[in-house]
Image 1 (spheres, rainbow, N blue to C red):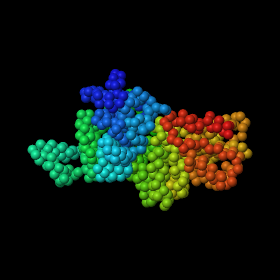
Image 2: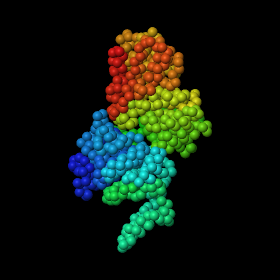
Image 3: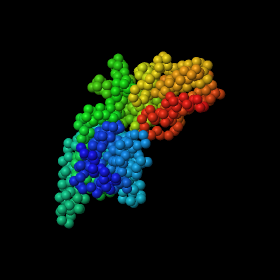
Image 4: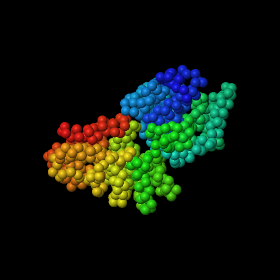
Length: 621
């Protein structure tokens, strides 16, 4: 394809409105070309964005942004929106440090109405905007664009229940591609399938209204009368939709790649003052055959060759894959073990477990429903099974209440496999796994492990499954294990202490940063300087004897790849203070701010958590 021509003219939605209608199809081709080239170079969310091109163009063609507000759910389908709202010239910086975010961010553009890194929040936010618009009397429209996968999230239904009876001007666009991240699951998926296959009622309804309105003198009255008796018509021809029962007007299904049809339905919806649902059917990965055939694998990708294809499923050299394969080995020996995921089968490495155990009732993908997954796991545990719930650290933030109420109080034995713990990288603030330690370490009787290599990961999974009651968490980073010299490898799964006991400095850390700490210790030793290194693998609870051990050193340096407030470093400081420690205590953690997108190694360097920065910090104290 030639270099983009039409895109050079698009600096705002107003420029899009000025394009001749016959140019819109060509514009969509240019957008897909740009999406493919940029995501192949930078990584990102590919399949979902390829499927939402025409839908996004139609929305910007009809509605008036930024006065009208679009809330994207999940925000990883918003790339075309970014391209059409003045960011095409910077789109090459997508997901790069100091570049365009992979998700909507109000600080990035006035056209980004609301953040969208986690699923399920759009209707709630859009309803708040709709109410505000009503109070201001500005006539603006609040629009929530929701992927059908997000409809497995309970928050959506709470919001729909309120929005449908609100009487507010809110438009919910259901982008139905039959997928979430993994293949969509659950009763709602079957329900959407029934709507897709039976559209006769909606054609009938539109036809009846058109005929009645042409009846002289009484046409509008007849339409109004028919609307009051619509339940009778529905049950004759079709059993209504859940959306209409909740109070929405329903339009669809609409072909999500038919620009003319999309524009027409949005123009019609624009005139309605009450809650509306527009059901749009799209093809995830549209325009790239490899992504169309395997959209789950092309949901989120690293840089890849578009000719060859290189879907970003976890490689064998990753914590995720090692965990998934080890869990398979344990499950072959123990029939109680089962696995649970919230639409992240590939990302968490559970595709191995799924292949082996799904048809035997031991693998459960509940969709994007993290809270449900936690309580469901507690229910499995209450009946004698041993569920391992694999979830990204950032999404585990959603399950805090369920962990406490449904898991911890009655000590339900659930193992949380917390993937992507620590700095994640290019997805930025919404996806960094920096809060799990501070969050979970405050839960009574919680046990948390943080292995630094594959061997420890397997050992920690064994310990969590077989040697503890109640909830246990094993947290580990994205990607491969760091290089750790053999002389610094602990024997057990609790802690390892290396170096002279009479050293003046004690360096303490856990997880991925242990590799950096080992390099620091080596440098001190090479210069003949005394240093001890304490590697914690079980980071909660911390026994009193470990605190006593730490207190024997005059200077303690703790480095933690997590948020400072409530993190391990502050817990250790509190325990040492209560013990009456008189030495010097130094803590380096994420100083209570959100970490923006950047490559992991560069992000760690900026946070002062690479070996060079740690060494310099220790020498300057």
